[in-house]
Length: 168
Image (tube, one colour):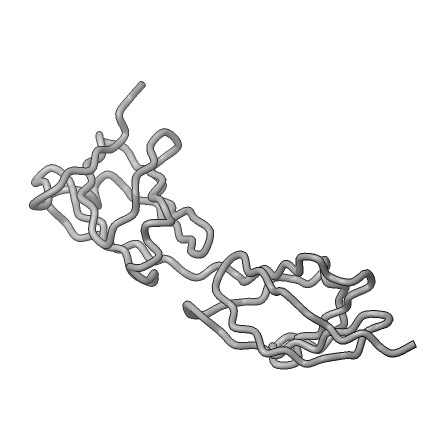
């Protein structure tokens, strides 16, 4: 197998470069990885030394909450150059465990239209930062409708609802 890249600690390699990551909080980096080409995956850090063996490769940030990618040409990664890689928050996906049958959701504070969705069909909610507060109108047959403020993070979010049963 051809070794596409190697990451070393210390000073930038004179025959490589330093990849500087931005757009992702340091506190969540440990849950993400840097994929280098198709054969190499490493723990993510704010700065990573990289050496390419004469060919271009794809760099990708992978993980549950942030993503990012860029193509790195071999000529860009030489002489100890500083190369940037931007990560961005993934859309928030909501899961409602143990939800009543027929649960519908309207995100009343989202920029998207205030459309009614079944709980398991709610589309991902765009994120521009590490957290976002939204207000949800939740309804289910046999339960009182309720407004719930929910603090979302990029990627998967579990929302537990306790709805009040209607008398009868």
